[in-house]
Image 1: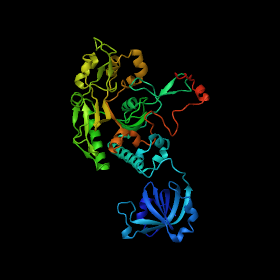
Image 2: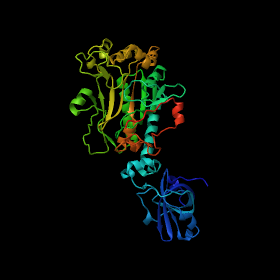
Image 3: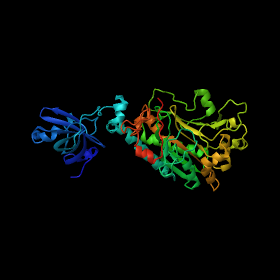
Length: 474
C-alpha cells in the first residue's frame, strides 16, 4: 500500500490508508487509546478501539510522543456532534488497525507541541532538530521556502538568471572583518569567506549576464545582535543598463506582489513607497532607517520607505584639510557611483564631503532590509574612489586590480541591491530576532551549541595548514 500524506486523508473517507510520521500526542482513556499523528502536511487523530486493544497492546505499549511510526487504518467520518471544525481533519478520525514503531523516542529535553519561544534558547539551539519540529518553527521554515520560491519565479519571469558565486575568495578591505581560511597548498596564504558577492556580481555584469540574482550566504566577523548573525542570507541582484529608478521600481514591485500574494493579512501603509532623503531622515527621525508606521501597535502594518541621496564619503579625522587623501571613508561601499552632477567633484577630488551617491536603502518598520546603488563601471572613477580612501597605487592594484582590469574591457553601466533576507522574514513573521527564521543559527555570541562550534582542531590539521597558535592572554 502506498503512503498517504495526512493532509490528503480527507479525500479517502471510508478507505484504508497507510500513514508515516510522528506521534504528536498520546491519550489513554481506559480501553481506548487516542493518538494525534503528524507529518509535514498536518495532523490527524487516530484511535485504537476496544475491539483491537488486546491484539495491538504490544505495538501500542512503547508508542510514546515523538516516536516515528507507520500506521494503517480506516478513515471514518466523525458523527456530527464530534466534528471539530476549527481543526485540520476535524471531521474525520483514523480507526487504527496496525501500528509499527520505526524509531522510539526517548524523553525529550523540552516540550515541542507548544510554542518553544519561552524555552531557554541555549537548550533550543543545542537540540535544534527538535525545536524545528514545533508548529511555529515549521511555519517559519516553510514560509521562508515559499517566499524564496515566489522571488525566484518573479525574477525568472523578468529575465534574471540565478548564478552561484564562490565561498572561497580573496580578502579585500571592504568593511567588516573577514573570516579567513588558511590554505594547505599555498602555505602562509589565506582565502576569505565572502562578506557579500559584491565584486562577483559586478563581474557578472562584465560577463554579459545582464540580470543576475542569488540567495547568497554571507559571512562577517562582527559582534552579534538580534537582527545580525555571523553568517546570513542575502537576496542579491544586479542589473545592467539601468538607472536608480529601474532598480528601485523592480524591487518595489517584487515586495508589493510578494506581500499581497503570500501575506494577505498584512497591510502596506503607503503605495508607492515614500522616498526620503538621507538629510531629511536624519533631521526628522534621527536615523537613516526611519520607522514611519502610523500605528506602531499594529503587528500587520508594513511601512516601507526608500532612503536616498546618501553622502558618498564621511571624514575620518578632524584635520584642518578634510579633503586630504586618506581623510575619508565610504558610508556604504566603495563601488557606488556618485549622482551624475557630482561626478566631476569625484574626478577632481573637490568638495568631497558634499558628494552624494546613487545609494538607495529600502527600510521597513525601522529596519534596513536592503541597500544598493548604481555602481562605478569606469575604472578611472573607481580608481579615484580608492585614492580618496587613502589607498596607495600598489595596494589598489593588489586588492582591486581584477575589478579595474574588468572595467577596461567593456563593462556596461549597472546597479543592484542586496536584501537582508533573514531580517525581512523576521519582520514578516513577527519574530523578535532572525534566529527564529533560520534553520541552524548561532547564538548571539556566535556559537553553535548543537555542533559545539567553534571548536579546536587536531595537531595534525594545524601542522598541515602551517599554523602556529598563540596562547590566549590570561
